[in-house]
Amino acid sequence: MDLEAIWRLSRPHDSAQDDLETVPFFTWLRMQRAGSRVALYASSPSPASIFVHAVSVPAANLRRPWDELTEWNGSPFDAPTCSLVYGGNDGPRIERHEPWDDHEPEVLRGARQLVFGRSFDGRIGEKSYFELTQDITVAHGLHWLEERKAWCRLDDEGDIEEVAGVAEHRLSAADSATLVWINREVLEAYLASTATCLAQTFDCAWLPRFDTRFDPARIKHYTDEAKTLTCKFMIDADASCFRGVQFIAPARTVHELGELAYARSHPPKEYETFIIHDWKNDRIVEWSSAPGTLATYFQPDSTAPFGTSPVFFKPQVLDKYKADREKYSLSDRTLSCRNAWSLKTFDVNAAGQVHTYIIYLGNLPIAEQRYWKSFNEPPKAPISQRAIASDFEGRWDTELDGLRDLKSLLPRLHRESSLWFRLKQPELLDHLNYPLTSAHKPWDDVIIDLAKVVVEGLEHAALKKLAKARGRIEDPKWGSIRWLREALIGLGVEDERAMELVTPLDQLQRLRSKLSAHASGGDSAEIRRQLLKEFKTPKAHIEALATQLHASLTAISGILQASH
Image (tube, rainbow, N blue to C red; front, side):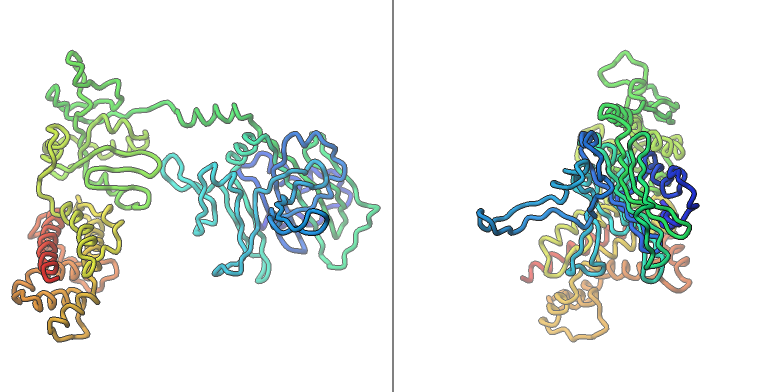
């Protein structure tokens, strides 16, 4: 909705024009009956002033007399009250009052506000704001996101969907137009389920001069043939005004809306084909992920591949999920998309291929299946030993894994060693995964995140206090890693051993400063070249670094805890 365009709708028109259905403002009102978004509130200042305020009205009210319907009075800044009342014979008491309960005209009696304009001087920044009725926000799972100026929810693909919102258009340094809108589909569900219709009250005028006066004798009344809109109006060559109400009923019944919602939530299931290792029949073959085409262990006579037939992919298949940490949760062996889908298990084999099982791919939405298929390739090595142990032999995974072990250690240090270590960003642990390609960014991201959860977890003040209490001399240039070393020496650890224990943390911090996006200098390429020369792959480097960090932090924790 173009707020500036709405603002211009009330400008003057041909004074001979009596067919309001052709007037731009009423063209916009007519579009409200079928558009994807519906205005619940709109306001702009003079000279082209527009005021639209929508409320829900019991559908049965429309059978009441329409007399004086243009004399409505109400705004989003009206609100229910629960306040002190006194006088008369009843004595002081608390009474609740709904602004539309005793409203005249009768058609609008008992209306319910959908938008509330509120103001609070205790707020930082803007004092005034809008709220959407909880009958809509709670029932439809909507949440206000300030950065979007909208009430949002997650759609079936895990993306943020704006369902209603507040828009502003700056008209001048002092004035702006405001619009509160809502998605028609959600509004219709609310109206149909509550047996109500929408009443859009409106007051629109073009007043180029503050002293403009209208002749009451020239004011006309209009009601459309369908009896959905009524207003009083006057149009002059240099001024115009319109005041009335438009009623918008839901286009579909609750049963029709239910059928639509059911069809959307139960679409025909589609399945892709993948190159699989059909170990049952000892072959590499392309096969459908549809459950009906796969065999189980309880079907000995079936020649179809098992649902646990492995499928292999290029490691880049995970890059998309690593890049969007808000939408996707990627752990060592599981992947999920918020509010949408999950991949029960995956792993990485010795050749660096990501692998899972064909039956789990069939559970993904078809768009995700097609994405995974674009990285599908024949196996270059068997599935990982970890997958064999846990998925087929039912054994605990006891294989050494530096990063996994470090991620398990850090929360324990946070709980048990809070005087010198605190995990300040625990959510990062969920995003710490091995880089599976030689691309720089995933590798750098892991190093940066490791530094945030390890180095930034060291409590500088506590380590400094401990070291100084053991007689170590202060240097104002020292950071937390150096103070850790000094604390260890103060506790009787030999200099060489103390240096050995903090070296992995030092290396991590140096790598972070040299390889981060904000780092300066031209030696980052040489650092990566040397690391690849020594470790062959980014994954091997991170595994070795995490193993060293785990060993050092374990030993340091033992020393510091023994000192208490």
